[in-house]
Image 1 (cartoon, rainbow, N blue to C red):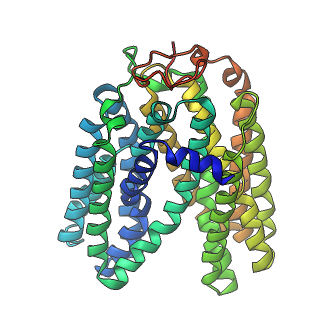
Image 2 (image 1 turned 90 degrees about the vertical axis):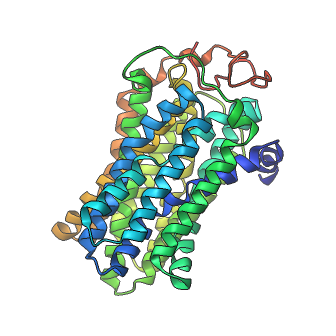
Length: 419
């Protein structure tokens, strides 16, 4: 298993691009906890903290596909680094000005979110030219999904460490400065500077004119909803037991399950169309969420949480392949950014829905939201099977793609562009 991942990391530029992207995404991955800790330290209420975090999330959802389209049009360095700097400046204004002026605080987090660089989509656009070969790129997608789980686990720990050593304001400044350095590391690399999107058809919908991509986005909205609801449901479960530490165990188990599932998924080569494989994986993901409504004792619940996370990273990794196959020519970064946005919006909705569910029916109802989200995600894929199952035009080889200047991509692999 490890040999396949080591093979990818030994490829020229691969380790640097993966590390730089993860570091560059730290501000986004830790924004919610950093904002909440900062606002509370300033004497603000949880309502204000939640509202500021929500504005940041909404602004990020709006900005990702817009910046992704700009990357496809103008290249990575001209968009990613300036966006990272502006985003960091927005957070710096919040850290230095505080919450004394709420309009200024809201404007600062809105700017920070809107200009969050689409590094995630940018990395996936670079993999074909860096690695070459369909199997290696697909394994890189799985490794990417696993690495995300590591970031979302280690990032909050880093924030809390910085808060303990200095202050929440310092944590905001340091995390965002690190993020800029990560983005800088990516955009000065040779693959990022050389990358050019294929010529695109002028269309106001951009990547969204692909029916297959729309079907995938509809499904992953509900996957995000399921995941977002679990974060609230797990907290409610811990409160019921009167043991806050249980929340940490449940979320750690969920992340561990995703790590194991993603590592196993990426270690082998899969036959058949990824669209069909995605339906199976999402079905298993939904099946894993359903038993959570039983809310057994903490040990059994931790095991169920780990099982529920096993198919998350494989589902995300497989979705990357489907995006790559269905993205219209010249829109690969935008298409990946839409997936990030849709997943994030779904998670926000899941968080919002799970809260009232707890109040109306108790903890089991909030876990039922996760189960319903998983089932809905599967139903969308089943209902749109004809659209997703249509042979994508990317099946034609793009050996001469602008993204594959060395002709490294195997015949029949798309590089994210339609012929």
